[in-house]
Image 1 (cartoon, rainbow, N blue to C red):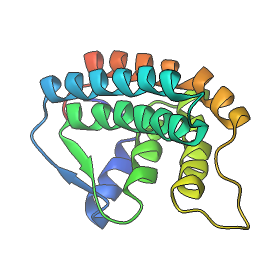
Image 2 (tube, rainbow, N blue to C red):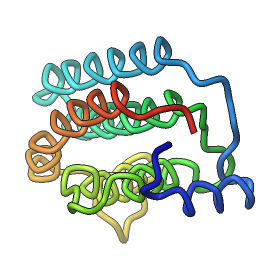
Image 3 (cartoon, rainbow, N blue to C red):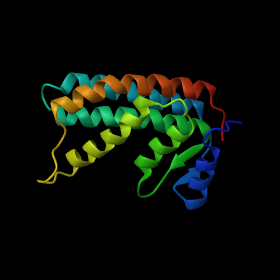
Image 4 (cartoon, rainbow, N blue to C red):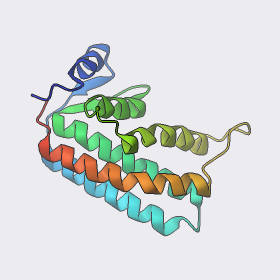
Length: 153
């Protein structure tokens, strides 16, 4: 049994943010492969559209973290599902502090501002992309290691 973060996962199950699904290493591995593809695509389109490239980086990170939960037989749902993915993986992996996983939190905010533009909030910039591109490979790599070691919940 994976004890770290268990209380947070159980609370998310109780409040409906999280639901049980069939645990699937195969699906988790496919999601990780999709995350790698999104990362590669992001690098290819940066000069064409930094906003699209940033969104692809965010998608890559979110897919990788979601793979961890799918491997455990868990899936987020409803309002705030993307935020819950990040929070639940962090709850199950800290300490030590997971800077790359935590970076996905600010990436989510920038991605939302980019996908749903507001004149009072900036969309993703080249600096945002450059910062995110340093973290996403680590997110994917660590998520892959977790998939190999975390048992179903």
